[in-house]
Length: 319
Image 1 (tube, helix red, strand yellow):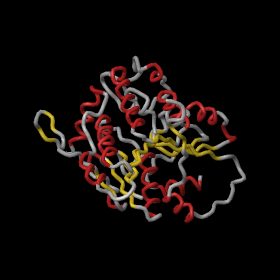
Image 2 (spheres, helix red, strand yellow):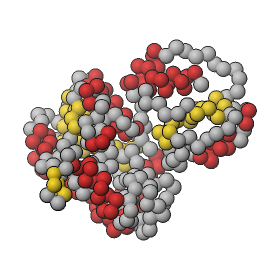
Image 3 (cartoon, helix red, strand yellow):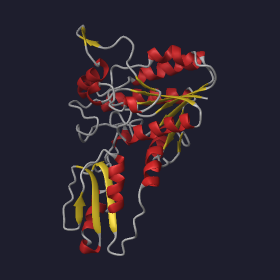
Image 4 (cartoon, helix red, strand yellow):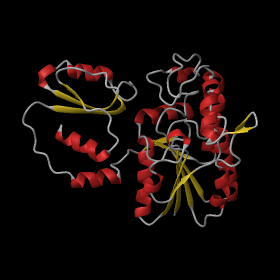
């Protein structure tokens, strides 16, 4: 079995963590697996690139040019600049992987994760998959949905907005990720959804670890089109857990940990629930882990943002 995992980032973000864990587990089981990612910080190679085996930084064939000026790390930079006005990634394809894919001996799984965020053009992804399926019928297409991007005109995270249910007629905010200056979501949503229908026609299997994402997808594309497969504990976490000293149960007040990349973002943190817990006062103790905590109080301990998983889990165990 041969597997190619695709994600915009290698080791940053939840989707990258899931894709990377699948890649490492496949290698552990003796399967042939490679991880293809778009870029690291600043459009450069990921700082984690050399930490993991069989990883590929994907640079689209031909590069990118605007006004006949070639751009270093061009695709991501150009897409970032233009997305604010176009509401879509204009550049980016997988064409330089085509020969590698069709010449792979035996069954091959192309497992897509997050392909947006200034990396790839959606129409070019579909075209690539059509060409591959025509030349290599034993290719299996899988797409794990980690956000709502597949059902909206632009946004990856709806943040409570349900405008996608009526065609994104007027965006209530231009700042929702990915942010724009001009709202064109209502003009793009039908074409974008057609691309996902094209993927379904090619036999692509859509899955999601999130029930609400799967339900949203199925409401647009048909019942049962997206199946729910929950995330497990990744290999790195399992290794850290095995090494952590057991912590005796604290007989005192309950301690609750709230963990998110950005604690102020409603899409990651239930602000109302946290404030309701804070209102319990001395009955509980809240510990937050993440950036930009809006929570303050005598029963709140803000630990800040921690990139080292071992330190994070040690702090959580001691909290």
